[in-house]
Length: 134
Ligand SMILES: [Zn+2]
Image (tube, rainbow, N blue to C red; front, side):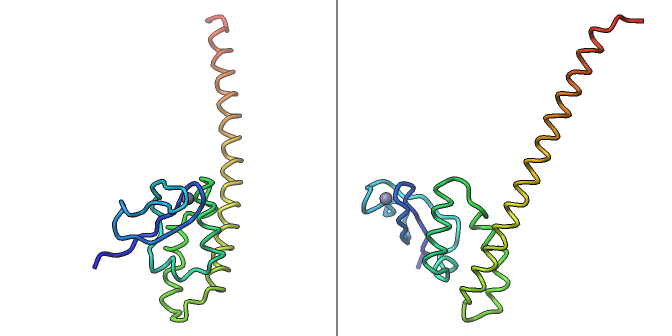
């Protein structure tokens, strides 16, 4: 039997599980659904709140933490936890979101520095060009 894939509707956020892509059509919006980048097994272990959160972030195009990354990082923990401790996973997810925000902020700072350095270099280049040759 083929594995089920998680699909979600980009318009309304509804999700479903299908074996064949052509069956993945939103029952409400009547549009093809998109693949959600997380395994069926893993997705099923998440509580409803976390599922909705991940899907709404995916739709917004700014996943606080890519689902595939959440899955990879928490996978090890999951193996050691047969109960599928959702609270623990939620805590880990929250930690990942925070870490991601921190990295985004750091990235923005570095971006600013690059723009500033680029402007300075450009400015110097222009000055050098204008300067009379010795
Ligand atoms: Zn829909």
